[in-house]
Image (cartoon, rainbow, N blue to C red):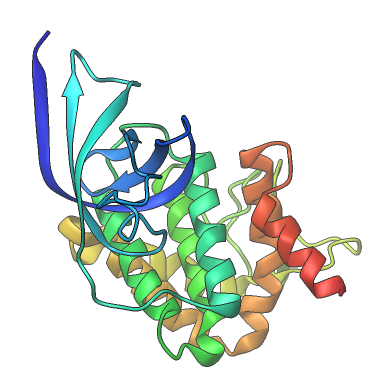
Length: 267
């Protein structure tokens, strides 16, 4: 059976779990091959070279082999190197990074390439590991929007979804999981003005059109700028709407990181 070797592939670990007494299964997000499952044999042994390297939210370069067709299989990890560049996020930023990992684990299909999204994710982690301050909420909302758009789950933000009626600047609209963007009802706890949705639409579209090679990174930067310029209220109102939409597409059960955040807030 023919074996293909992938060398020095940029990657991040999304999740890992025990495979045997001494080995791990890794779910990794690679730049050129998307989400890939790898077995790290002997990674739990005290003498393993993998032990200090296989950390989440850290930029890595991985070498692994693919046997046969390779699609949907678990491949064999052969080497791992820490690239460096930033420290491990801590506190709320750490939980936020693990939340993004769980989102991608739930929403990205295996071996479906998302190179621009990979670059965007790397940039987000760099922010989370820095003195991000008040930028944390806009950073997360921007990445959620770009992720949903990239995998085709974000409705157009310049029209009402059901009627395709253009948004009115002064009216308020809510993003709902089963109905897309609609005029806000009295029961809608969070909504944005038409002007705000149009600003987000323009940021995503303009960022995407500036460079096909790095479309998501540009869209993320433009969306982040729009959210920051709008002040903290816009990101706060957007948060429950995006969380509901993301949970709808992730299915049951509730995201574990989301449940953990709720439990911590209730203490």
